Length: 574
Image (cartoon, rainbow, N blue to C red; front, side, top):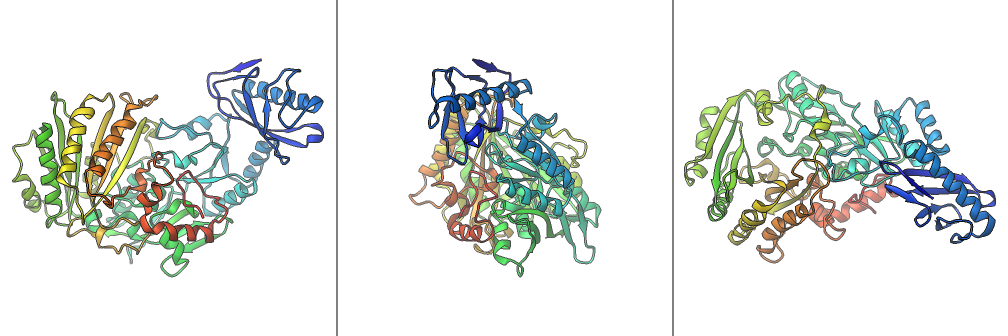
């Protein structure tokens, strides 16, 4: 017997099978189910381990005879119904969960619903997970109710703000998660007397910039992509071109409103649940669901000068330019200067593109003097641009003059098929010249030959005047304060659609390895959790993301979520 359909078949089936009691059958995703040979996983309170697809002459493990045949026929019937219903079987438990959520006034989508695919698609199309359900609470109390219900149903829970996780951890990073989507919790209000803003965790960065500017000309340090959600961004860092003068997004947090694993609602601050307040600023996804965050805002800059200066280079010149750039970044660079270097293939055959770009938030007339120490060492560029505007126009200009508001934007157009890695480099032991030469060689050879569309970004976090590095190493859970660069390595499929080419993994691995291997043994590099890399092993990611804070983070997890209700493959556990 064989059942097929265009998409994967997913069912979570509860069956009453005579004296066996209640049998739970999971039909995991398969493009086709062949009951003459495939195996169906089954679990029940008696720990029945497996049913084999059988005809009347085949026996089932831990079952036999007539009871086995009854169980198997019921399972096959469930499969037929699942295929008939488009690949999803609506069980009594699913119906019960739907009914309970409806009774709580919480909207939700389930497998088989019209909008399920829309809301369960991942920003990174390389990865695909099937949540048990996605719920859309309107406020903190509704989030608390959803958490209590999820715990009651023994479902793992995952908060989702903007859904931009590189590893789809907003979907839980696995099948069967109850996703608590915060997009409706998106209010923002500014206290004109203090300059503090209370912001819903489901709002996106572009909308934050517009709303803060409209409410008294205020601003926060945050990333440049307007579609990223606040919750995850502020939980693990939050870097933008104003970070060297204002810090990371999480450095501006005064307090959180948080729903804990037992459904209780608490406020964290330096004096209320200070251990949780510490953990949520750097490792936030593992302890609860932040629904509202209070920030200290800043007056928006009066002027913003966006700049981009470009060169096309061969391998040798490219390596030497990286060396000059690092030396410049370790000099007396003003805090008002935000810099990123973007590296990619050039349109000129055999050449690499070196883009020196960023924003200057001082007087426009002082911009040239701020970048002159680097430019004076460089040949004439291929292209140069520098434009001084107001703050909001400047943010829009950075993203190609696109609108910052996300209200009428089809966010699915931003979806991509990619893999990314990151590397944080210590200021005390900067990148060696030999490592930059080895890195240039990988880009000039393997990089230029790759079919992927790749880029590398060197983001300047440190330097002598940086607010990021001025924060004490242990003041927040963000452990990597004494860094010069965060480097992002990113490679997408050529058409932004699946399948993802395996050469992309090898290319980025080799880029990172060229830098790590050619620096001194014991070099204290790390990785940035907002550029999460699901291929880092359990022996790698705790140290690379959290350094010596990891042990304390596990202890706090034991206090606030000992049952690991909030989980993903790289979440903090006890």
